[in-house]
Amino acid sequence: MKIAFTSEGKTWESKIDPRFGRAEYILIYNQEKDTLSVIDNSEVTKQAHGAGPSTAQKLFEIKPDVLITGNGPGNNAAMVLKKLNLKLFVNAHNSTVKEAYEKYKNNLLEEMPF
Image (tube, rainbow, N blue to C red; front, side, top):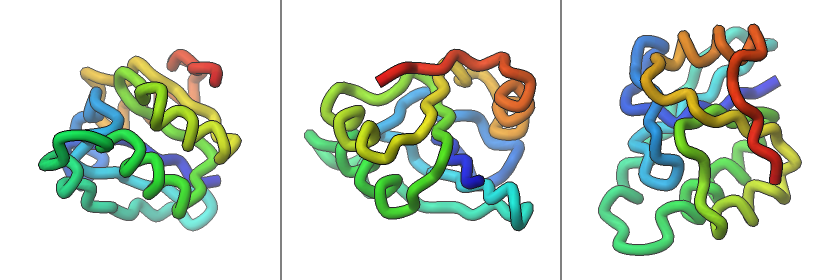
């Protein structure tokens, strides 16, 4: 299973980025391989419009099973993510990526329906 996190940095100790579309990084944890990979998403922070759909398109290419973020995606990004059939968990802001993962494993994050 692949779990995607919106992140302000590149490590397990980085804070979850509360913004979905303008998240600086997307971290992908592959549970089967126990690997953490980093996707630099910083170019969308300079976009005036369309950052959410651009970030959602990156996830569409990666095809994670789960997305953990802060405030969740906007409507346009949510339409793209809905096609992935992933589970979306929100309200992970103020946590590190590692803390958010632990909350996810313990069913302490809010699942956002599409």
